Length: 324
Image (cartoon, rainbow, N blue to C red; front, top):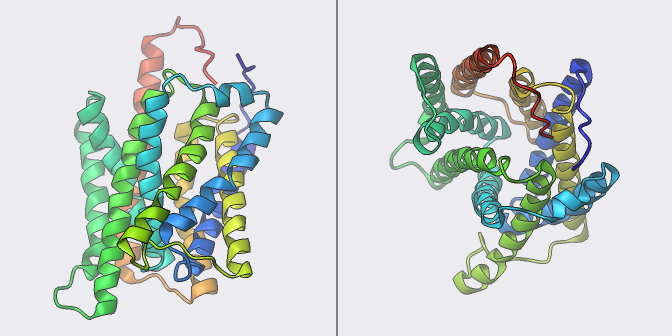
């Protein structure tokens, strides 16, 4: 078993998490910039395939490559891959239809759905505080997408409505991913979960190529892009792999409950990058809705932390689990 290398260094943990969030936003901006030139499935392939060598080198350097190559629950990884790859593809498609800050704000719905799914599929008890937080967050999401729900709009507005629906479905699928990961960590090493997602996403993305040939629709048909686009897609994969390593490494130095609120820095980065790269300015509904979703998410994080402290107090004599 790999050596436990955790230590309490909150400053380093926060720095790693913020860098990871920033890099994920850079990756999203790259995908958005090439969205009109390659279909989402092809973008998912590049994002996943070129992350594999980065993750493999990192696992080898940590002495965890063996754990990453030997899964215990293979079908669990397959289902995690199906949900995660579908979410990635829908998000990439949405990026081509919506402003970057709007995609980011809708994506904040994931923790809300995760709480509901944890109650439905894991039997977790969800009481008033977390239910109130979920309701607040979902109200915020509805405020963000409400301008996209107009009836009889022009073609551009209908495309934006489709984009909002795809990103919202992606947030639901990412919540399902969180439920599957909670189950996977009971049987598989973290290295295997990180490694096999990139592997399964690469394989599943390849399946979109024959689908495109059959359907013969620009949204699915793979193309051979120009060199500059290929380089940008490769960069997206490498940046995504590095960001995944950073966010995983951040949890070596601090707990998840302390780091979770820093995910919301993505709205700051998305607003800056969207303005500079795409001349996008967040609208009032986006900022209001995002604020409510963030408030709900922070309330959930606070409540999870309180529940964690209560569980720790109730088991004062339990030895450390030694989990990676």
